Image 1 (tube, one colour):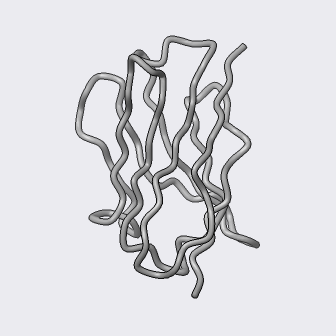
Image 2 (cartoon, one colour):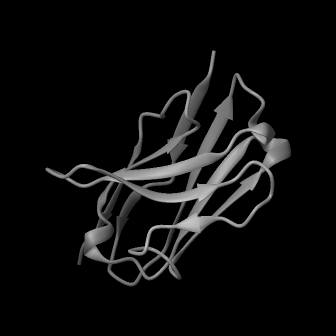
Length: 112
């Protein structure tokens, strides 16, 4: 079945970096646009970034542009989100999504 499993979250100080991974299975990963979303406590889910399936340029929410980079390793069926210059407001549960399903999420906490 279609499955997405996120990993790589954790506790990091402001200004630090993390790289999230999303392992995909059960569908042709190379033919799907993939997205990252996040949800902070008490807030709605927020779109973070999109990796188009056709090699077009990735797109980012204004709040993360210039700090986050989405990429994919198609042979390994893995989507990444490199997060640099992290801020406390980046704290939340991060999900990957392929329009069919969403993973269980990985927690990112930015705090000193």
